[in-house]
Image (cartoon, rainbow, N blue to C red; front, side, top):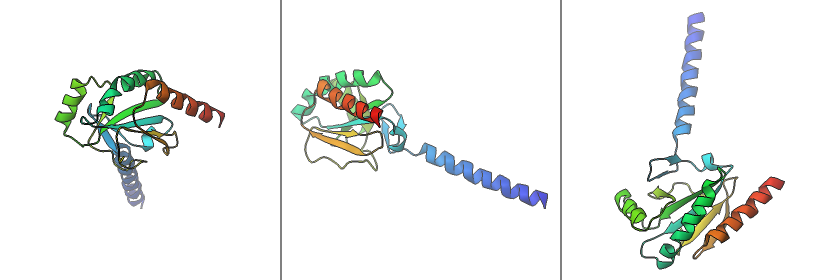
Length: 162
């Protein structure tokens, strides 16, 4: 009887460990650097997602601004910036774009799964996701580091008072 109970306990523990490991390994997107992320894992952060394409002149014009914003974001563990290529190019093509245009921020490999926003209809498009994982704002057109920082700082103030 003891052996049977121990066997059931060990099997239950193994199932629990397998489910926990499976959930922890789930990713909604991966960056070119091979880091996997889930939207749920990014909760408690403000996430900025920028869609771009090489054929989009305003997208390329805002790259230096996004680089500046990324420097701001990296000063805290509460803000993340990710860029997504609208054309869903291969990793090799995306790496070439990153190098060619000196994109210093995290680049998403492929298209993100189960995102809290839909694919934009025009470019450039920037999405602000709040600490609860919900879409806060969709910004159309070129963004500046200053405007993105203002939005993020405003959200941080709101979250601090809640």
